[in-house]
Amino acid sequence: MVDDKKNSEECPRRSVYKPTDDDWYPSFRLNDAEEGNPPTTKLVKISLLYLAGGTYRVCAWGNDDFGLERDFEDKSEAMGCFLNILAMPKVNQVDLAQMNFIVA
Image 1 (spheres, rainbow, N blue to C red):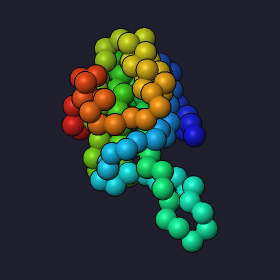
Image 2: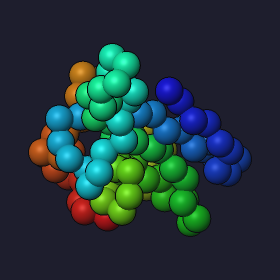
Image 3: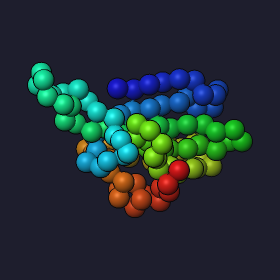
């Protein structure tokens, strides 16, 4: 699922929900269970944002107030990072930490 909103003329906001094994306090949930059972697939929201002053941010957020983020001065670097995350089968906190993301 992609959520595109114009954040500026420079860079549209892009958000994608990716599967995760981690608890993102809490994670989003995909309603993929059989009838009468709780959802089984945990999701994290990955976003590419343009911030005031020419900075780009790639961030990952759970369904409340826990997230990891990384800022970039270069739009192509930010987009490359975002696309690398999209290519991952699952996005976990340790993977993002290894990519120099910090707690938001």
